[in-house]
Length: 518
Image 1 (cartoon, rainbow, N blue to C red):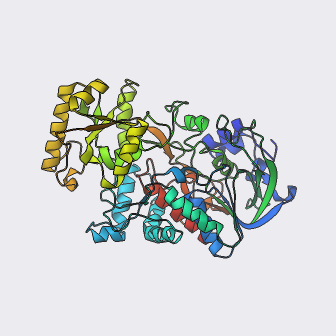
Image 2: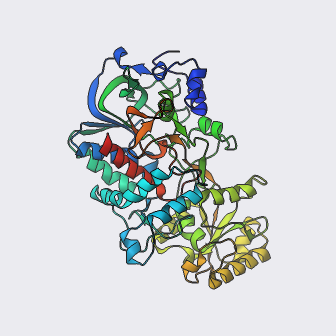
Image 3: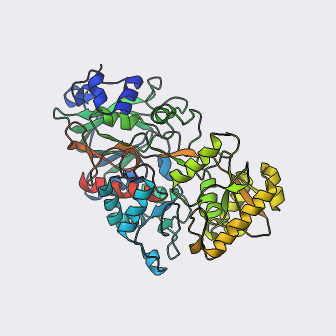
């Protein structure tokens, strides 16, 4: 096997098997699968190199640069931000000032309990504790970088959380954090961002520590190929030294059709994803090759609020999560009945939807409600949803039922039953309707509907880190010298399924921690 490269097929084996796969492929130690310092000539030298320009990468770069380090941030794509820039801008902050202002009781313990429930108890609790302890610091840091949130208002209530604790950016998008943070980072002395610069491999010293990276500048991502496919040879090869270390913040792999299907064969190869096209597994696989411990790789979360009537993330997640799911209801079109708690954790809801779709792939459930079922802060998106066609408007229940071939009498009965539960403060599926002060679906239209289709959204698994964001070796169970990681490329924090709005908290917090500790 060449020291300079490893084939895609071999990489997939390593990704699936973890570091144990190295021995099966004939590698006797970590450096056998990568590049050694003694064999290269460095083209440029930095103190810190960050791979990825999302929440985690930019936060790490900012903190490292503020310490006086010369920092290089690289991204294989032509646009900064990855998934973070198309994220919904929702940021879970336990014990935040707005909760206290509105008398909402929260605690570190409550936050962790909520995360453990969604994660089926397999979360690495020390990471959750770190997030809970630093969340308010993280919010202040994001604001320092120029991010603006809808402060002074009651926090949003996301599925699976036991209380409202989520802050929303003013533009209801992750770009509300990424754009000002990019400007902040680029304004720091000694900090540089290079786009279309693809990370190819780690450069190791003779003690299995990370001392640099090999990259290709001028890289052109081709979404028809995998990002690290041998067929994509675009770009000029360069080698960069990182005197203090490398921070891996390359994100998840929900758009990697080959690798995600290896982990969960139930995901159709042509399945749409909420992720940007560059969300592939290549950088994570390279970390596995040098000994990083893989954690929870097979747990892939699907967004239950997504729709088949738009590509990618779109506007449906906001129209459903903070609208039709919150105050309206979801219906099985085959029988006109509700089938889930619309504010349960994501896995519970996605599983409920798949239970229908695996029987009849064309029987997409719908979310339905009236104008009063939209949170005031997302009302501007209603017209956008109608314009794009991801949401439909009907004058009457009869008209809505006819459009989706729903038994009309059953649909009317379901609405009546749901409203009665809201009024009584007790829902048959356990939805926390008591907190909604008697708001239900109005008897008078118009009625708004969105078809539902779970899409791969967040990959729970990745490299194992400790509370200092150091990557842990599966060979020694100790930190790999010079390698830190943060964000979705890491595993363990969220267990089997992540709670909505905790990704921003996780990515920004551990990005900060990586920059503080490297």
